[in-house]
Image (cartoon, rainbow, N blue to C red):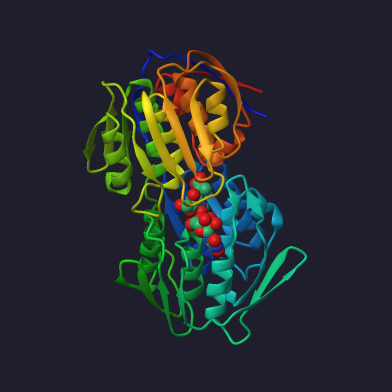
Length: 422
Ligand code: EPU
């Protein structure tokens, strides 16, 4: 299992340019949605190096999609040659929760599917109760058998009304996928308006779907008979961009991220400015230059446009270097502080009480052996290691490789003293 050895320094700032990848959390629903299309779907700017994307390719192939990978162009061409299989196996759902997105697409196209039920993950329980309650409103019935949810709509998916009790990103995408080809009109309320969900809506609309915004978090979907495959460029990965900005923030460095829409990080950039980073944005780039000492802050995570839960672990790492007391409240997942005990091994002072992290920032961290246990905490631990004096050995890096393309090369490129160890 791959490990990273990082020799950090409290006095050497990272420097350089990162070309942001396409967003993992945008491309996974786009790929799942390909099931609904009549002809070839072409996706460009695909983060092919993110392992979740490879898992989704295998999942789609297992259902019968033809997937062509054009590596040097970061492109996928997905074609539905024949009828899909209607079974999404546990091995895909257990390694990548976004596998549940195939459910909405298969239902939308075939009115029927069987999908392994995801259990929890290291972030805490990952229920799909809202997805199922929404499918029920679209004229479906479901039952659980041997760990698989069997859903069927014997008389076909019909438009319906559903209000999400709490904003859910994949829940929103799944219900959109199930309803674009439905008979009649669907209204979805309290939906996620994450940029990745809006990217899916844009893609479906360009293929002929009739999806209308009728309020800040409400859409109306008029079912259409078919969707036409077309080419779509995946948006830049705001979480990846934020992660590398934090590398400059924690090491007093300077970094420019290209191929990212700064508007997708409005709240997060405000926080980075508030804690003392200089930020310059252009139409599709963000530059962070930290010259001053870091300042403390208090914040809560929230659905977009609030501060993203996916950015929180990296910010927590940065705040370990802001002298004084900071406070973070995580409002989305129950177990999102997995990086904290590892940062504490480096000398950070972080106290977790239920959903709140109290961080007492200090100027020095020291390298230590650490274990990563989820995607974003991997990057948070890497940040700690970069800013710590001495060597850190981080194991279970595969968690990070699920979502970060080119992680090792990018870190090397910005000047991190890093080696791989097996
Ligand atoms: N929830 C329910 N019932 C449901 C669905 C969700 O109670 O049926 C709750 C969840 O337990 C959680 C909250 O609603 O408390 C939000 O969960 P959401 O459904 O929005 O999460 P998700 O769609 O499973 C996506 C991203 C995550 C990201 C979250 C929150 C993808 C593939 N995953 O997950 O990304 O943290 O939204 O923004 O888009 C990551 O990339 O590292 C990652 C974990």
